[in-house]
Image (cartoon, rainbow, N blue to C red; front, side, top):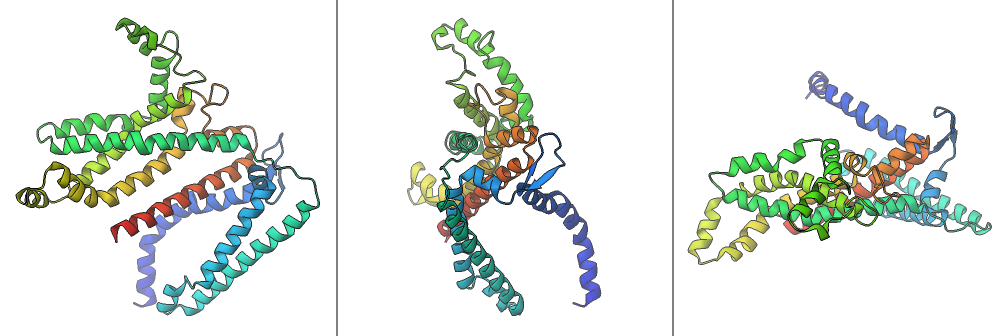
Length: 359
């Protein structure tokens, strides 16, 4: 392929690459740049360079040093194991060596920074003081995610199994179950806020009318708000998993089930030996999408509880939003990068587990 053909081929990719760079790559590096600064309380555009101080305030200096050292060790081991071998095999040996040396250099810089910082803080009386409000918001996000991984996905899987076997009414159920995800989070949140408010709440009024008034309570109060938010999110979001799992079920050849019936396999054996193994990649895809989608929710808690009462439903992304509103631009950017790193690590971990199970 000559240079002219390469240029023509690149011209087809260039518009998509430009859009991707403008909306994803450039904002990422700009966010990283902002995380190294602190904005003035009176003027957001007045930024002062503070280095890694925002990250230290989130983790505490002691934990931050340990994490930097771990990253440095990981990068050095990654380079020494020659993970760039594929580039060498593709006649890009020079690029592979450059990346290997650069990775070792960055890892060494991380270790040097961790060592010098450790010596500095060991001579000072620095208390172990992480940002508990931020980490509590992350904990709440993963609490809701746990509900999504269990209750929401199990509900989606059961409904997908039922609709897959409903030959006559299957299309109708697909529309009904996917209706909630189509509606916006804010709309669902406002409707549920009216229904679940303590007085005059529609749900409590219904319980009283059917003789279950003793169950009526403040569903958005201090004790129940987070669980209510988790169940509301599961109720609204199970449709995504339902559609993906249903599509996966319909790709399983019917001949496999017929052969299993001829061999005398009962329904349980067909489910455990055919359905589940064939759906493993789809199940892991749904798990990854559930984690990514649930940890990043903001519209539903903002509309349903506004982060209250007393911050009991302030999830991680809502916390970042409040910090941005309070002109803590650098601190919010650091929080966003940490949350993104957590999600990327979990996603790659799940992908590795999925590949091992498939093999």
